[in-house]
Length: 361
Image (cartoon, rainbow, N blue to C red; front, side, top):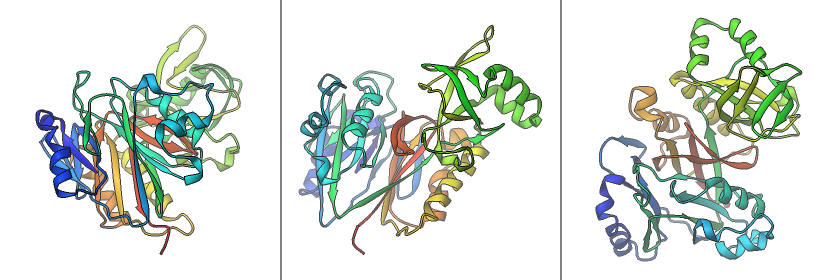
């Protein structure tokens, strides 16, 4: 797996060739990024290349590439996805997915993968660093692309586990959505959301009031089976608030909503992001029967890192401190792919980790 600074794009065609010469039997996957992560170090605002090499006996890595026009329609059966990806659900694959942000509708491919492969892990990110269509490089096997999505399906003797840290903490009370229309939040527990927000705001500390003014989000519990007392921080999908209707007291959210869902407002800053990552890693480590991973990839938002924390290597250092000193590569993304309550989403301001171990031993 290789990630290269977007500043090297003029030499991007050399990457598959050089790696192919040194690793003739390896499957190559990677892309360009605004920042690069290698050997558990985060390299920002500098040129870098990070290479993570895995020896995976008993594992098959099947490459795939798709463009928007080739995506199966929602009316097509799961077999249509199996055909374009070259792998079947019976093989129990897990997917590493990389995308160009300009040419690929992320939610379309992710919802399709969930539809066709509901039990598979999907993790990855969107290439970053270029503001121009065609400005990103995607590396797959011996080829280089500048659009679409690429990935590998891993089957056989491998377990892929994920940790998704969205960097927020809840404020106020957990509420049930009692009226919604698409992405418009109209009522929570029988109250207009703006009325609830005003009341909640008056009861917050000055520090939290300041966060609400600048960094307020809605967390939606995506598992419909969860009851109020069962919801944990990692069960929320965090989405931006994109507008308000002052006259009616409605709030527009960056996600489709359903009546009956549980929801809670959230805030984000450096401290809450650090606490959330610590909480999600702890949750991972405390999972019953958890075995030690032998390597990992980190897909981190380019809005984290030094921009958020004011120092280098925060997320990678915390990962190493809690999980151990294992190979950790990755890059700073323009959108992070990770699962919440078994469904795959495209996130922002998130660190999404893939942790690898063998099924045997």
